[in-house]
Length: 212
Image (cartoon, rainbow, N blue to C red; front, side, top):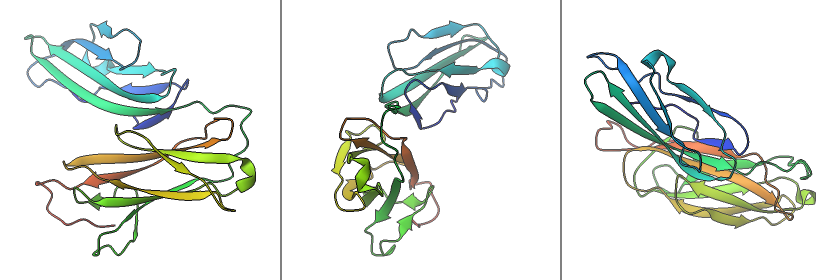
């Protein structure tokens, strides 16, 4: 079973989820069950692999595991799990966020602190300096909440004329993609649109070194 969906989204906005690549070479898929990790009931249906598509809306912010189970005509079950981070819905009364930039910088000597672009490869255990900048102190921004996949959020206070701040996070061991996401909050608790950078953690099967 395979699931395709964005790594981040906003509460109260629909998210498209695709399981169309969950193909069975031995025969047709006869049933599916998908759960969204929230309070909604799992959806169990009888359908073919050509129609494995859902649209779901998370009503609250948080980190959720989307689980898919597909069963073929021989009774064999395939499973997939993908995690999504849902940011709070922006308040229409919130001040305009003029700019919010998220950059991940490695402190490894071979990278020399160069910015890591989206999709950059890093070694397990790499320390990442996360720098955020809101760009407008007059917007009454208070802090930025940064999450690294399902780890506990880090709160970065914003200070100075450019409302900036930074914090250090460590990429956990294990191959795969790691998403660093940031959401800014003003003094009233209203949230901005989320920004994210996804890094690839190198595993034993990778054939090249970390790069930027």
